[in-house]
Every structure is written in C-alpha cells, then in structure tokens.
Image (cartoon, rainbow, N blue to C red; front, side, top):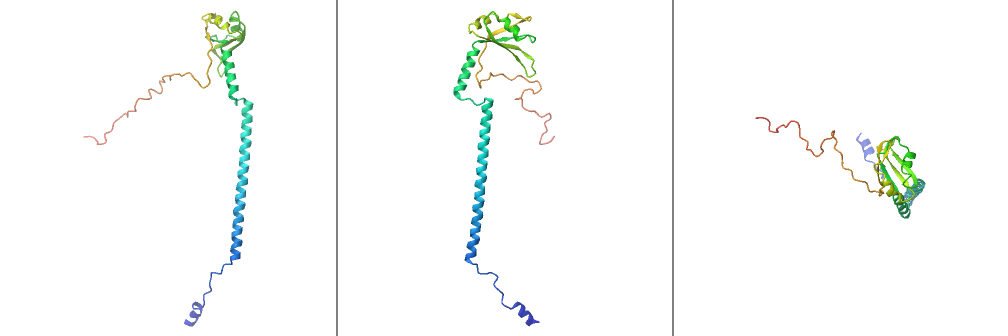
Length: 202
C-alpha cells in the first residue's frame, strides 16, 4: 500500500507552466491592438455622426427662427425701433373707452383733429375690450388737436386722451406688489403657538 502511494504521489510532477512562444505573444498583442484601433475608429465615426446631427439641428433652428422673424441684425432692430418711435410720435392713447365702442366710432370722434391712419382697441385673451385704445394719425400735428379732446364724451363716458409713449424693449414699468390678505406679511417671524420649555416644568 505504501509503495502504491509512493508511485502515485512520489512521481514526477509535470510543469504546468509551458514555455510561452514569443511569436504567439506577438500575435495576441497585435490582435489586441487591432481591436483597440477598431474601437477607436468606431468612436470617431460615432462622434462625426453626432457632430453632423448637431450641425443639422443648428441649421434647422436657424431656419425656423428666420421664418418666425426672431433673428434680427442690430441695424434692422435699430431701424424698426426708430420706425416704432416715429409711429408713436403720431399716435395718442385714449382711455376710458366704452366697451361697446367700435374702432369706426373712435375714428369719427377724432376725425376733426386730422387724418386717422389706424385705430387699435386693445382686448384681453378672451377678446373682450380692455377699455382703452390707440389712435394713429398721418400728421404729427394732429396730436395736439387730439389732446384738446381730453375729457370729451363718447358713448356717455369721458375720454382720457394723452400722447402715446414709446415702450423701450427690456424696460418694464415697476409695479409695487399689492398686499395679499391671504398671504399676510411675509417678513413676520413665525411664532409657535405653544412654547415648551426644554427644562420641563417646576
């Protein structure tokens, strides 16, 4: 029994580590390099496709903005602003206009001042008149004549007439916040309804 064990365990143990063929190692390294190169090429290809898509999107956006007229060169914007100021210098603001009043009736009311080019009665998002209008004349001199009609009556209501102001882009008139009874004063510190002493009572 001992001899058999000697034969089994005492024999020569074959070397598990085989000699590495340097040629085969080069082949394996070269295939790994090929894989890395392929992966890099694929990444470059994907990056190129993404850049092309981004360029196409930018082009489409520019086209849409151009169609909507949102893109303006500074010279064009300046000229349109100057044109707006010129139109406003020939226009008046008319307040306290009756809701049932039509643009034709407003035009007839100011016809004696000069040639009325356009009457605009402002409405809300539901199409209901807001109670004021803008009247644009062809002549700038008509403004002074129209202001003389301040407090004149139309449909039994006294009109408020004044020269139209030009709204500057980005300049909003500051309005103070109105007090909201539901919110109360915001700066009032919060006071808990009951104060519990951390030291207990007594």
